[in-house]
Length: 185
Image 1 (tube, rainbow, N blue to C red):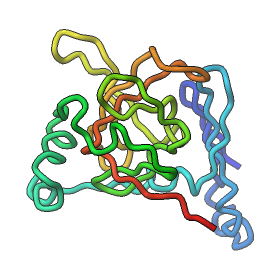
Image 2: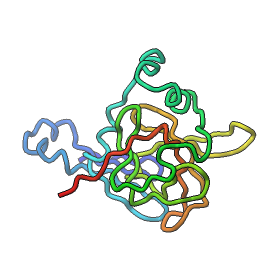
Image 3: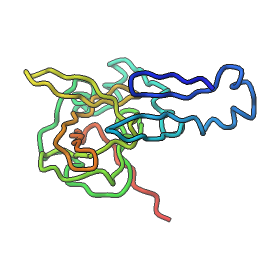
């Protein structure tokens, strides 16, 4: 087993010779990505992070064909929808929120809360690898932008004024999200 450590991330992957071993390949779902986040260790199976390994790259023309004008503005031009206008601002269904551009799973409805800000807010992503973060110093402010780790779509921003257990508020544009209802038995 090969172990790679980068900052606070430890990735366990099979060595090349282990990958050739058919029985080891069948254990693919047991690869783990272990992350140290806010002092807690999270174990995330490969199936949860697999979408982040398969990047989606399209031209601006392709994105313009697939997305609505509002989605294109928010997701590709890093725009923001007006407060309290988004489809999911006051929505309370049970299920998962996916990237509207590529379908990557981003958030679970269990982490959604009413922040009073006018945008859907979550206290944690589905897994630490579900949302990518990047420094954003636009508009003379220092913020942290959130984007889809698969297609790079702008989602919104994350702030340190959310509820426990994380203290985070992922403030996300509805235009960046697509809701998938929980399967009922």
